[in-house]
Amino acid sequence: MEVSENEKQEKPVDSIEVSVTPRLTLEILKVIKDAQQQHGLRHSDYQRYRGYCTRRIRRLRKVLHILQGDKRNFKRRDVTEEKLKDERYLLIPLMLAERAWSHAMQLRQEANTEPRKRFRLVHRLRKATVYALQLQKLCETDKC
Image 1 (spheres, rainbow, N blue to C red):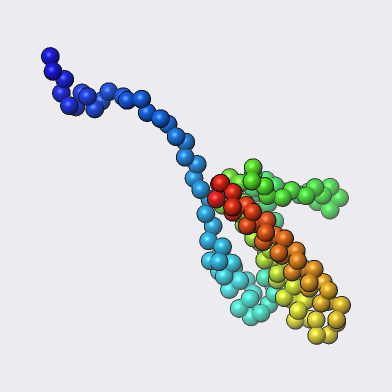
Image 2: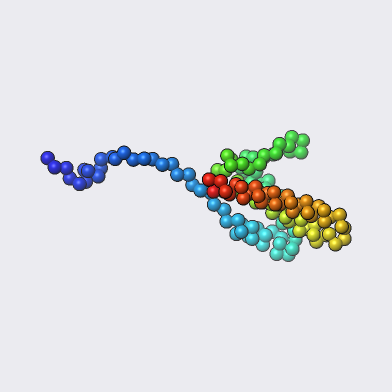
């Protein structure tokens, strides 16, 4: 008795199941430029943009369940590689860097009147760099 080709194809062959985890992607430049144009930087209003970044960070932390507590019960919770499950986790260090940069640019506008603000400006730029490096480190993981 001969076996037809259809019957041959129906028989399962030892297959290897590979679980493929989806890679996280984030178009950083597009996200930043859209946010800047819609929230104050079109008119060089850095304070308004900084307020937007603060509110966005708060909303993201709330949705992703990584709140840091309140003023009395503060516990710092950074985004780590283990917590990366969604693209929104990458938005937190991005928005933190944008907020620090926006504060520095606001201080730069005011630095003409008070020289002490220049020191605060440099401090905020360093902070923005730290958050940007944190984002870069997260983006270099296997999940991204």
